[in-house]
Amino acid sequence: MATCCFSGGKGFADWCKLAEKPRNMTFHLRKDDKLKRLGKLIRPHSAGLSTMPVTSSKSCPVRAQCSRSPARWRRCPLGSVALLAILLSTQTGCNREQTPKVTNASKPDPIVATSSETTQTDESKWLANAQPMVQSFCADCHAMPHAESYTKKQWAAVISRGYDHYRLSGRQDLVLPSPAQVERYFVAYAPEAIDLPPASALNLSAAVVPHHRYGMFGKRVRPARVADIQWCQLTTSDSQNKTLVYCDEGGGTVNLYQPGNFSSEVSIIARMISPSQIVCNDINRDGQMDFLVMDQGRTDAVDTSDGRLFLLSKAADQDHYAMRVLINNLAAETVVTAGDFDGDGDQDVVVAQPDSLVLLDHVLIADDGQPIVNLINLDAVPDLIALEASDFNQDGKVDLVALQGRQHERVILLRNEGKHEFIAETLFDADNPAFGCSDFEIVDLDQDADLDILLCNGDFGDQEPRADQGIYWLENNGDGELTSRELFQSPGIYSAQAGDFDGDGDLDVMTVAQLPSQLSKRWIARGASPLVMLQQRDGGQFIPLHLSGRLHESQAISCGDFNDDGMDDIAIGNYFAPHDPESRNRQSAPDLLIWQSQ
Image (tube, rainbow, N blue to C red; front, top):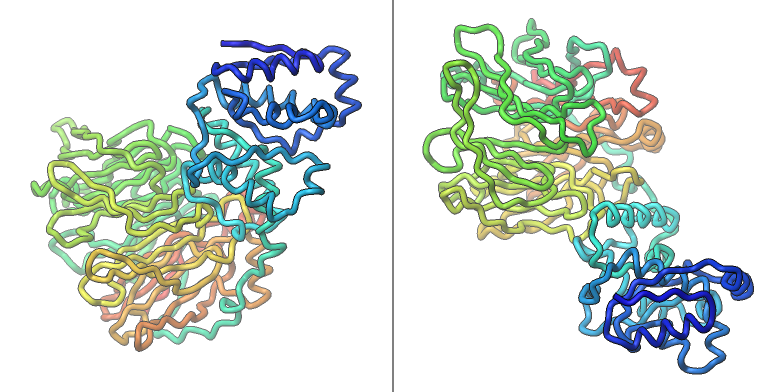
């Protein structure tokens, strides 16, 4: 390892000589008076620098720039060179084999954007030169971001977050352009503003459906935060004994409500800290529906590992549900599903954390009441945010369909090959890390005997909503290929479910959306609707219609024939975000909004 300290012209020349030798180097900057004086005279422009690995004179940007004539030394920004030395030692590491991955075959020319050179260089030429290096960093682990996803003003915050993610990842194998360069590149192509909501989402006609609406209230002391709702049959022998079961993160409860019985009230079957997902499945095969519940373990759970997976079960002669912990120390973002994946007649459970995928084979309850599980590690698919068990390819084996979020933005089929082996296939790739996948439903939307997918991309994180958010129909062509079709464009659509809500025999789609309250109020004042029904007409056309709703304040929805009259009904959960100033005034609002046919 060669080390070079420089404090002026001579040391800098020695550094360039060392750069000609094929060795790795670490640079240390000594801040003496001479360097300070030179820095004041030269006026460094460090924001325009890019970092490049230094292995020879051919790959040394400063050597290539300064060796042409002595006059170039005086024009070279010494403060920028000092920053380059620091960045090289801290960001690229000591391994000269760590070179950036670029899309074209040759390495890009170094991007050194001093103020004088920028004014002399045509912007289009600079952008063409910058593109390979920006792409090598910004598209290394996901698709290249789309400049039009954010406005010019928003890109600085987006880029800052991207650099933070890279530093936290612990990686040191990429060559980093400066944040100023990356911002300049994306801002050049970004729009000044994005007109939202789109005109097509404003002033919709009212939906005419034979349903009446009412609200149901749970027993709680805080505003509701309904994160998940499921409609299920409580016993395998009685098809009339059906219920809604839902998780309330705000109250920390799992609740049952039977909408077909008007004398029914919401009952609490379990208390925990922050339940976020519920799966209905007769795990122990006793004819009584059991519930798998993911508890995040903290009300402010973000990147924590305090989560637990509970099994709630009860015998036919019992009046309460027993709570048993299946797994401890789970990530808050964990998602689960259940099915008979090995075809042995037992129900298995699959648990997906951001960096692992585990199958719980043969969940049994011992004589002492404790669960016995056999854990099998599957090949991990990172950052799954939703997971469903389904024989998607209709080959007789239960597959896994997964939604991969957090900048991957894909729908993946984990095809069941038997013997606990799954092969990953991409069904849909948004090719846009800002797409914002939020939820999906597997359904035969066109009723042609193969399974389609309804995909929502209403997650915009801590940024502003985007124009490409809405709901998409991934139509199965019959050969396993899916064709993407946008059904409705409206930012914030978080989840959707299909059902025949007008009794005409085809499937319509009901959507729910989540937006900050102040933004929601502004949009509603302009004619936006927080609840939209897409009514299917002849030829597979979907017409957006308005349902009454206060604000965009829902994430969960479940549909089914609640009263056995042959027409599907709707249950929507209110989700009052804890940090939204409007939420503190929503204690008296219901947990559920029910649209039931009559």
